[in-house]
Length: 459
Image (cartoon, rainbow, N blue to C red):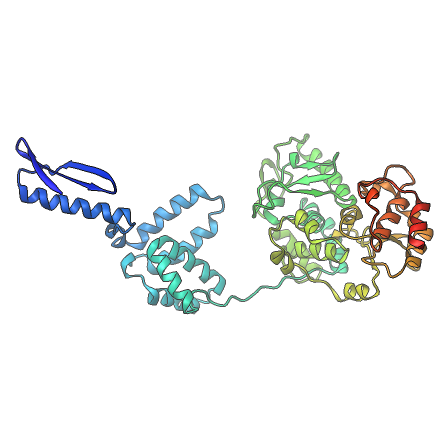
């Protein structure tokens, strides 16, 4: 450490972290130069150990910090409505406070103030999260201390959804056809058959509907797993789309790919370049007329529940509805008592084609990779596919194959069915593998004759 003079100005020089620091004190006083050297060394040490104080931030009002935070939030994220709502409450109550004055007691006081306003605990938890995030490192310290005391989050009331019964979806479907709102029937059908969220339906364009290939491609979604997912179009949804498209052509004379499926306008749509603002007004009238209780989002619960009751695996359901984790998916499952009774008998009839508008219209091809399928004959009803998760004995396999396996055809989605009469053979193979391992020479998917499998099972 040394100071030296160049002309009339004093300089200081020292080594720090292997580097030479040589700077001018910009003063003609040697005493000032020594003080400047000590201060500069102190700044470097604090910066090197991330200990540099930010006093200018701690004396700022929370109102100013919130404005900067929201400005940066709008650049980084799409959905800013809830962030603006949550930060707005924080600014309303704490806007005049300095960051240095906000501590653990102030956070607890904020929670109490919002509870007195009858705010939901879940909303209060999100507002506190935004507040602590805006505070930076000081907020991280408060978060750790409150979490240790188990006071960081208020116990939130869990909102349990429901799955509509088939008769409820049927009543809403019939009333939606008679509604004056031209878009509600298709929107309701999409919600029940495709499990699309409200925002996904409203922002749907014609370029996302591929009737020739039989699927809908979702655009922007609430979750990353939901964006760009493809949803198969069943026969009920396809017929409804074709009927709606005809009405759309009569109204606008053409259909463009970049036009919205549900155009803007009240009481009648008139601008296809903008999407409708809400679907729930017309739906609430239909729900009241049908004497049904529930939310629009419960249509997703209904689809997921019926897919699960129909034997679809978790991965298949997540791919259709766009869920990220199994934990979220389980919150949507409401397996009904009727299905639980079927599961006891090990015969769960497929819902395909039974409901005029319900999500049961999904083709059973979606389930072939998750459950073994066998033809099922119910008393007084046409043949339907049923999900049989296990077989009890070789005799049952032979019985299923001999009596009903021919009802299963290749178009049902069997990727290894190769000819017109190969459906029964593939079904036979799948049922046999449930109890017997393949021989090493058969694990590559080579076709095996029915007689060969019959002899193997009979052993």
